[in-house]
Image 1 (cartoon, rainbow, N blue to C red):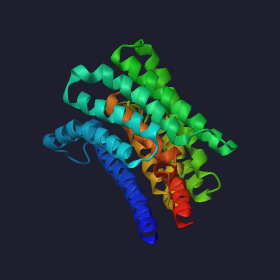
Image 2 (cartoon, rainbow, N blue to C red; image 1 turned 30 degrees about the vertical axis):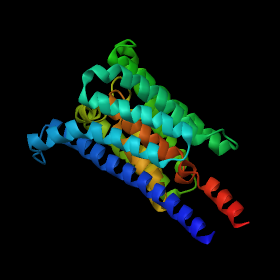
Image 3 (cartoon, helix red, strand yellow; image 1 turned 180 degrees about the vertical axis):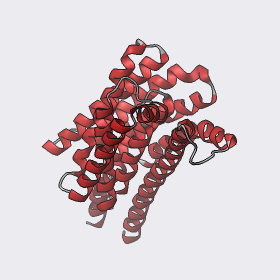
Amino acid sequence: MFRLNWNRTRFAGGRDRILLAAGAIALVLVALTTTIGIVRNLPYRPLVVPEIVRSLMVGGTPAVVAATLVAVALATRRDDVRVGLLFAGVFGLLAAVSESATLPAVAAVVGGGTIALFGSLGRPATYREGRRIAVGVLVTAGIAISLSSTVGLLEASYRGAGGFLALAGLAALSIRAEGDWAALGAGVLAFAVVVYASVTRPFVVGSGLLVGFAVVDVSHLLAALALGGGTAAAVGGLHRREYSLAFGAGLLLFAGVPATLPRAMAVLLGAILALASTDRLVDKDSHDRDTKEVSE
């Protein structure tokens, strides 16, 4: 019995590591791709990025992000999350290989992603859980509208609305840093920096937001609020050693507006990691109940 209990605990810990590893890998690649895009678009080049490196990052990141969705799907014990992420990840991989799979992949990311995200959050039982649901609604609506406008299912004019919802969801993610004054201070500082840069260098900031984060028809003020909210959540996660929150918030920050499939997949993974705890994703409570029953 004790051996069985130990094996179950170790297995649950392995699932935790898979989730965190997937989030870390996706974050590093998305951050590098976004940074390279911004640097290449600057009027001056503080860093020369070889074309082969840029091509590898742009071409390989979508497949890797899709693979991380599949990895999280296989690691979770929640059936709705597993099914939703498998749809999103598998069709995302197909779209990275063949453009003919783009429309099915859009449907899979929007539909499967919605099922996975709200499956990971569950039915809200408290006010704080309800706020997470509200953030999830903003993010999933942003993904659906942004992607649909990009592939022609909606008029292109709706892309601004999708970006507004996605960035509003990122700004609202600051609720995950509630009570952490260091994290909130970091968020305020990030907000102030973007506002200052927008006032002093509006064209440079606008170009960076467009190229790096796919921000279109959205005010710089909302973009600053989104950066501040995401920064506060990421710093709060690091401060409390909730690394899934830190990785998820980082993904949301660097992925920007989910107007393309790679960005949408990164936003989906980031939202799940940032809003749902790893304990719930690996269903540790279920493990604890099972362990107690076996011991008895």
